[in-house]
Image (cartoon, rainbow, N blue to C red):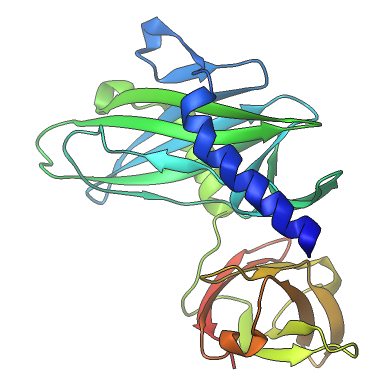
Length: 281
């Protein structure tokens, strides 16, 4: 536990300082900062066109082999991405989706994130639909191998017909398929989420799921407010279409404080990825 707290403190300091010490990536002037490149990664804004009154934009990060970047819950160590859209013009709302991540292990412990590349779909609703949206993003993220390198990228793109790309639309369509979805009609259903204990008295989150085609090939990422960190799920048993998993919990001084608390699940099934909101029993 002490080691984990130390890692979290290092990550917090790393995040706070990175805005001041990270060198910005090199912008391609002819692309009006739509794309910037560095030694270990590159990032580009996408424009897939307008649909149902909103622009379908995106953030495409490519990563050098052997390096990775992180999800919003980065695991035992790592740094989540941060998106600052405050410089945008004519944007009433901007929403970023995150595709389902993967787990990886290294010398710093278990991480959660992406390798090779990731596309974050972005839905942008204009304040005035008759005018173009000037999208401005100050993006902070980290790419890590044996060391972590902070990255600050300033990107800009006018969302209009002239900057729309068929290849961007294609990439965004693929990424949208990997974004977890909730609501009725999903093939996988969460039956229960409850606090339990292991034989040695350690707290675990016990989750029962129905409808998984292959319970041994699923992963569950759990999120809640506070310092609780949920480890990789262990399959405790399965029968009659239901599977029960146990996730060890770190960072809780009082495990009972989790009861009745809202919890967000992302379930990677190897097919359709599921999002679920509920209360811990």
